[in-house]
Length: 348
Ligand SMILES: Nc1ncnc2c1ncn2[C@@H]1O[C@H](COP(=O)(O)OP(=O)(O)OP(=O)(O)O)[C@@H](O)[C@H]1O
Image (cartoon, rainbow, N blue to C red; front, side, top):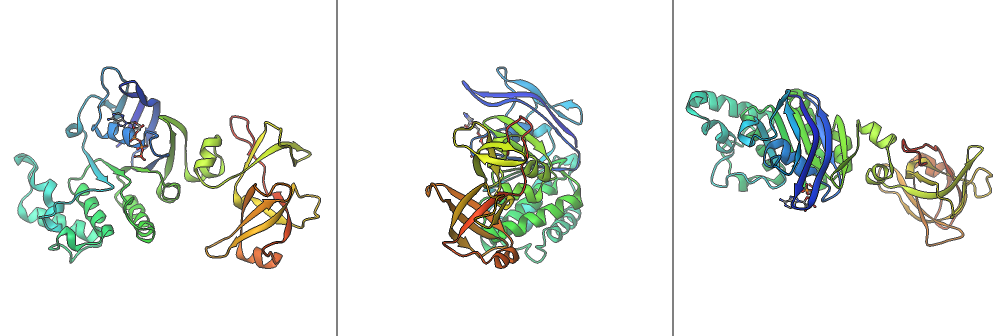
């Protein structure tokens, strides 16, 4: 299913929740709507679902395969939904929860009991919970429950799958496992999927494309690589991970720091290099304040020599860390590995 959102504006009273949104969702892709709390992600998802409609004071179109469904409610849109706290029916087994959507279908479309059984068993295999059919929701872990919720949404073969923070309530390890699993499953099924998340890592890992949203507006649409490595503006780079802020000017390829300068340079921790304190290439001198060795990279916090209140974040590999023999209290020099510019002209 191809979805086009055209000039969509949504108001709640005097509050503009979405402002002139234009977005094309490609058939079969996994698109993440990423933004801070209150930015309008859920509103956009609910509008695509038909849980919110385009009212008289709103404007715009939502096209499903070219047909405007903006004024249709959820019943007319053929979609599956999974929410963060998707309540499974407590009194029903896993099997009956998944079968629910099939059992309530109108008579003409109804499957026989045997067909329902075959379908549910296939879905149980897909979510890797065969053998769990007769359990009740309270006998499952949070991650298993969300997988059942997904199977329940998929049972009616929707054309679009909408996921609103589906793994939000789960712990970090289960979250990571489930999102990898979701990505594989989604690729296998090829179902157009929209995932709402405020977790940038989640979006970067699972999505084919990411829509970065702030206060009702789209800031950037791109592949995970594009939004991470070529952020369009300051909001996007800030939202997609830690950054160090410098004020200054670039002369002969070297950044000269000047507190009074209006030019901002935003550099990610892994884009800063630690060099010798006397190296001419250094843009500033700093003191090693904190070293975190646990994790795939070594994270180092540095304080400016001339202003201890300013902290810099640097990430380097374990081998580089060992090679340079960096220790707490060392005086070091800092050099950016790259200097790039935003599309709107500001430096990063
Ligand atoms: N029915 C409503 N009536 C009035 N205001 C609403 C309504 N629904 C949402 N809003 C407002 O619209 C804005 C966007 O809300 P939305 O739920 O879309 O944000 P979100 O990006 O999904 O945030 P979160 O990550 O916290 O869920 C918020 O300021 C919210 O208070």
